[in-house]
Image: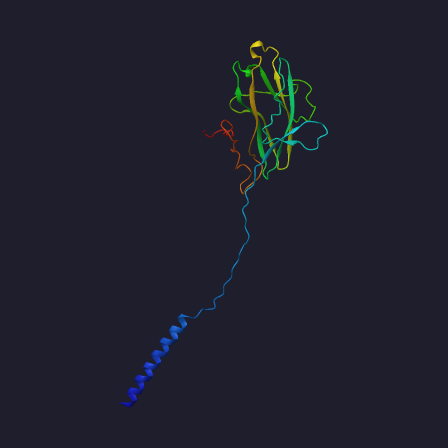
Length: 228
């Protein structure tokens, strides 16, 4: 009988010891092989579109006057206009952003008196013109129509840091009659910028081919075969 009790105690002790071992194992970390790879400091930085408008008033200037937000007109308000008169202003567009851009120069009429001077005022852009290059009305320029909605004048692409020069000529037609005396027209010179097809992604550089311009009527052209 004594041996039986001893045996039971031994078995019970063994079971308790085995359960204690399992409990200890549950809290144990196994030393499996592991490894980690990290590509750190991945940063996404959006580019910038930053276009500025400058005026040039002499051949000796080394830097134009920034008129991007100026309320002072490039055509002096006190200028007296008469049939046959032409005024030329020399301007430039600079890309101060980090992305290549395309831009349009446009004339947007903001106010006009009765017997609209728009009927007898003409406008022309001469691309690549520096101060003094234009010696006659629209001699080598492209006629531009000014209106209530901005109208395309030139369409140019600029790389970051690049600058494009042009002349803007305004002319009062010779056939303007007495009914236009003392009439007025006011317009803004607007520069509209959008993304140019230049930078590339994983599939090429055409991802922004349909990028447009700010304002109504300046959406990018739709490629052939695509519906509007």
